Image 1: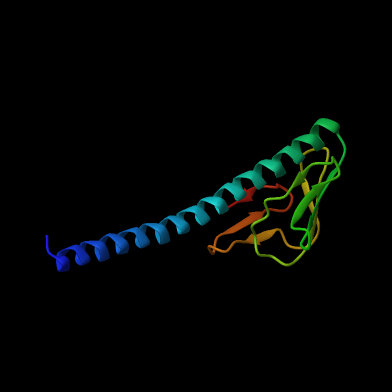
Image 2: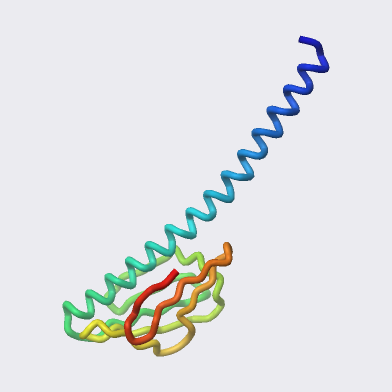
Length: 126
């Protein structure tokens, strides 16, 4: 193998490796966003079920500065990957219905996707 062939092989291998690294970072960030959406959906559903089980309202608060969602039950969700700069506050009633007390519950993510919590029903759509 000549020196030219060896250099060509090294360049080709380095291009392949850099392509894999760039592609894998996009996959990882997309996966983190999907997992965050699923975890938040589960958190919201747990709070709704807690309100039904207690037969009294449970309030959920999002604080932009701390990037945390807190509940009056003491539960906390810290993997907030959405980009909204607005706080929101929602209440789950004892019958499982939801009331949006303040702010927007349409959450936008870096990959362009959106998660929306529907008023009254509490249905989460991605």
